[in-house]
Length: 184
Image 1 (tube, rainbow, N blue to C red):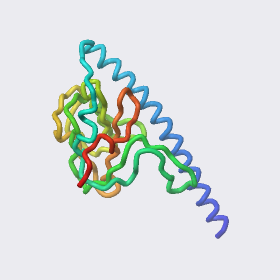
Image 2 (cartoon, rainbow, N blue to C red):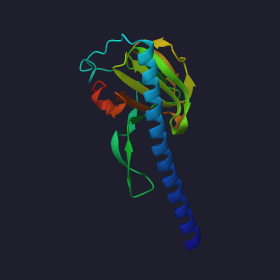
Image 3 (tube, helix red, strand yellow):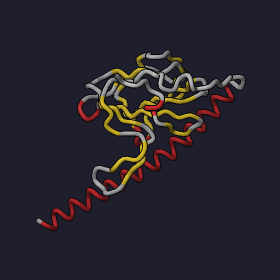
Image 4 (cartoon, one colour):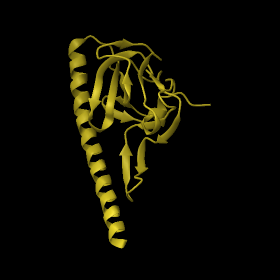
């Protein structure tokens, strides 16, 4: 029994370490993708005027109703005695909930991306970007312009009813809770 338990524990640890490694690799790849998309967007519209974002902080609607199950920043890994860094938040929503854009923008990416799963990236006029990940169904396409609160995707059901949400400014992750309206 001890040997079986040791193998199971070692296997869980190995799997968790591989998961953390993949998450780190995915984060590096996502940063490179966003840099590429930002450059392409700037080349398309070199006259784009970037405005202050202070009016949007603490003023964006939530992308979906639900409970935060993973916070931005340092979080304890459930299987290892180590911390992992999250560049966004995870929101546990009701099964098949609809995801809405937090602000008007352009869909610059809609597809599967590494450990982020199905993902949509919205460019909000070059001021900031919002990321909607672990999606079940897309309701928009690349290059589509969306309005604030427009339905853009759906989450799945059960364990798959979680939205990973991230905001970046100048390709630097920021705490989404500083951008979203406070819940009452």
